[in-house]
Length: 147
Image (cartoon, rainbow, N blue to C red; front, top):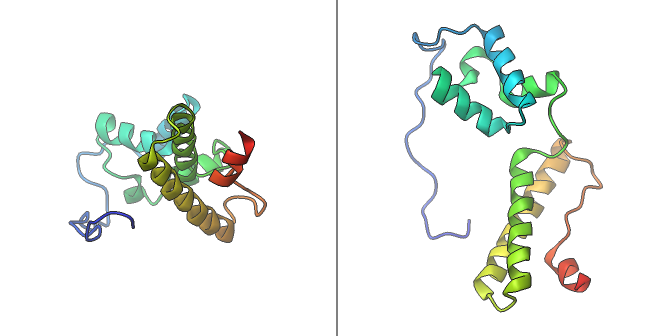
């Protein structure tokens, strides 16, 4: 949205009805592996990378499942979605940087953009019911009042 790029067009995965031939794990084994990795403290995106790189599973969608749904069924999912949580962590890192370097105008701009992304994403997740309606993130103005 804020870059000079022309969008995210590009090649997509070819559609398949069944999993590739080299996958030798059953859906139950994949589900057990997802639960095991989540109990080790891995995020859903990290679980997908481990399944792809170490077990040769290109996508669990071939088995009609999603990693976040498996985690939800086994009560291993936390409250805030991963992408929103990562943006909140990013804004906290930028704030920490701005406490040391308050005149860094590009960091201020980056914080404004990150806060904007957080607001848009939170609005979507509230509408979808994935986070509580009263969920609120501390904004930049509240951050400066706090000093």
